Length: 120
Image (cartoon, rainbow, N blue to C red; front, side, top):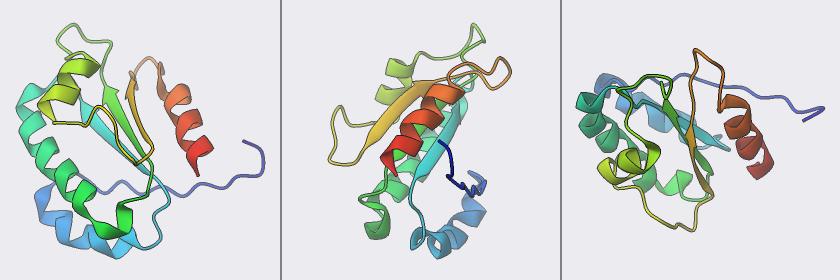
């Protein structure tokens, strides 16, 4: 999208940083949540992080792009299985996109970013 400037922050999924996140909520216009779909052991932790984001009052109307990464690996859970494991709603008042992708292959990233930029 021509003329658009984007600033991104990697907020890390590590729980010790959660308290810092709230300092960025006020100016947040979109969220991209990236999950390693090939590591189901991290789904519980990812769910806890995601639920905290979804509860934040300042983020209620912020569009959310949920990237299921590493879809190039045979061990990767399919997006529907990830959605079920993370209790993602089938519908929401929030603009929401579940996008399969592979950072290594570059697949799905352009489509996800295009959707996200159209929301802001």
